[in-house]
Length: 271
Image (cartoon, rainbow, N blue to C red; front, side, top):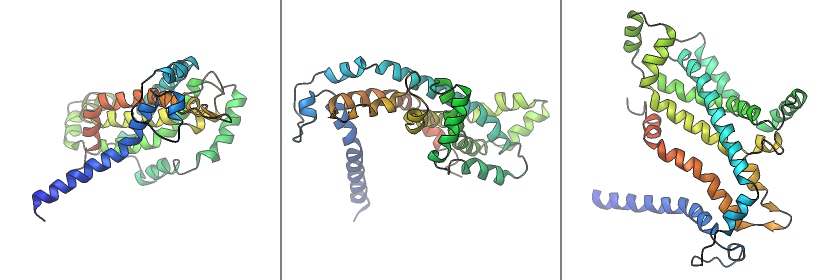
């Protein structure tokens, strides 16, 4: 097989995989514009008269409030995780503390514990403090859950900073704050952006904690989507419409930050 034919085959297989992975998303989007009778039919239809009933029903059930809660929790959690991860990753990479490997192992080991094992004591603590169904406390929990991954990602970005630049800044009399904020952070900004985006996505999609630690005032979008499946059946059209709306903020965030995301995730890929 020639190189040209091999390249064409790889391109064709790539497009097939893209279409296979994209098809469920495409089907979800078009189902949102179907009447419920067509969307729930066992005989799927591609051609139909589109309606916006599903989107109207989703909004009538108060989806705007759930979206606002998701934005508040995700943005706050991302800020908390990034602000705490920057000095931690800096200490584990450039200004190395003792026993770096032990600290890194401790960070990542916290992600190995099943969330079901910690939710009961967490629920009791928040209940005794009167902080259940509080969106900002949920954001703090999200920030703590995503902190280990954020630290690991940022450390890999900080390790790519040439130490000669840091040494030059120290010779010029730069303090720790200026060394981090004015010298190092601008060099790893794409990595920080990619870590922040991943933290935002994890927080946006979180379902388990949002279901158990909230009831009404602080409930986010994922539990709201689950409410469309009950004993009466699956309301597929309105569920698809609501899921499409819920996916838009993450898609837009990824599209806006795609350049920084690609640069950040590719840092250190080539030595």
